[in-house]
Structure formats: structure tokens, C-alpha cells
Image (tube, rainbow, N blue to C red; front, side):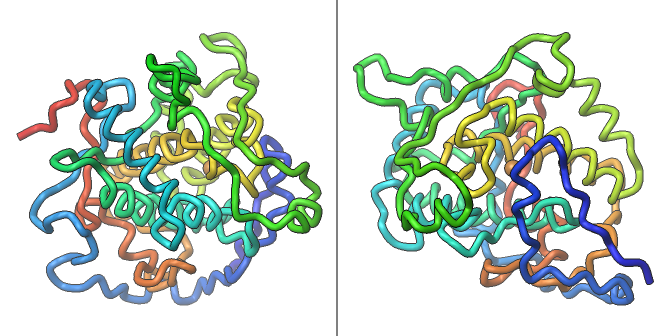
Length: 314
Ligand SMILES: [Cu+2]
């Protein structure tokens, strides 16, 4: 039995503050049989037989972008555990900090997190429109998707995808985490285009190299490194774990990470999640364990291929 040592990522300086919570990897159970309910999961609020397609943020139509903005604003207006403040706050502050980084739970935990966020986002979509979480393909090195970057909409109102209020965090908790108090997200993006090495966004070649790794632990560690670089590249709120999820771009970034994992799973069927027992519960989510995150179609979604038009394949 080998202990899984947490790898502290130098790229995301605040990672050292993250104390793994409730994470005890019991490696001798690695071979235990996971119980995924027969017939798949019935968790999705979408009609079970309809698969949601997550698309590239740059391939969304104007109507889809408008619907997404409306839904983010809708979630911001919900003050209970279906709202934006609750879900953004669940990742970091207010305490406890629940996200997992630098462990083999990084990918399963964030997949479950996106899954629940997407359910509540779909709940507040305008009538007749269903826009699943889009991914930000930062590997194009073109910078932030325009839908998220423009600070204002043509009518002069703030763009709900460009930033959000940081709310629900007691002052004392900023102090405890050694962070300046912030009332709103901010960004200080780095350089775009190739040739900036670690200060630029990861390239498509770097993503391909990570996808070529065959061992789950190697794959998740190196993917998390690329992920950290993107957080640091965006800067500001996104570069600080305790508040990163308040930036609407967080969700598009993590959807890209989830998509890369899905692509890797396609190439490595049955790979599991390294040493993590499949029945390992993913707290604080009520009903998902690690095994249940391994099938994205079981969770009711798929990724539209990057080369597609925005129309899901028939
Ligand atoms: Cu992240």
C-alpha cells in the first residue's frame, strides 16, 4: 500500500494554503466494486433520454450567449442553495473550503461541482433555451472568449460573464485566509499568442502531450499544472483559490478541464481514477461518489467536438 502524497503546485501559489479536507485515500480498496445504479443515474433534471451538449464558448450563437448571461444573472438573484453565491462559495470562502486540488480527487470533485452548478443554471435559463456549460478553449492561446471579456454589453449594462459580486463572506474569513477583502471579481490577464512559455496560456501541443499520458496519476497531475497556469494567467480573483469560483470564467475554464478528462477517458476506457476507491463520496455533494462521475453520459451530457459547428451531432 502506498501513500498518495499531495503534490503542492508551485504555479498556483495559494495552493499551499489549501488543507486537504476529508480526504483519506484508502488504497487497499482500490479494487472494490463501485456501485453505479443499474440503468445509469437518474440525477439529471434534464429529460433522462436527452443528452446535453457542452459547446465551445466561441461557438455559441448570439442567442445562446444572451441566454447564458440571463441565467448567470438569474442565479445571482437566487439567495438560497440554488444560487450563484452558494455555488461559488462552496469552492472556497466562506469556510469551509471544499474544493480538492493536488490529489487524485481533483477531476472527479470538479466534475461533480460543474454538474450541480449546471443543473441550477439550467433551472433559470430563459423559457425554451437550454445552454449547457460552455468550455473555454484556452489552448488556442487567443485569450478570454469575447463573450466573457467585454466588460459591457452594447446597451451599456455590465456583462454578467465578465465579472460578479463577491458576496456572503464574513470579513474575518478574508483576514484568516490572509487575503484583501474584495466585493467584486477582477482580472489581470497575461499575454496572448504563442511564445510566452509559462507566463502564457498552455498550447494545444501541451494539451496533446498531457492527453498522451497513460497513467491516471500522471495525467491528472500534469493536467492540473496546466489548469493552475490558466488560473494564474487570468490573475486577480481567478488566481486565488478561496474566491476563484466567483469569476464566471471559472466555470468555462473548469469545463475545459473536464472536457480534456473526458477526451482522455475516451482514449483510456476503464481507467478509473487512480488509487481512489470508486465508492468514495464526493462531499459536500449529496449524491455523487467518484464512480458516478466516471461516465459523462451517465451524468446526462457530452462534449460537442471542437471542430463541429455549434449544432450537436444528430
Ligand atoms: Cu481551478
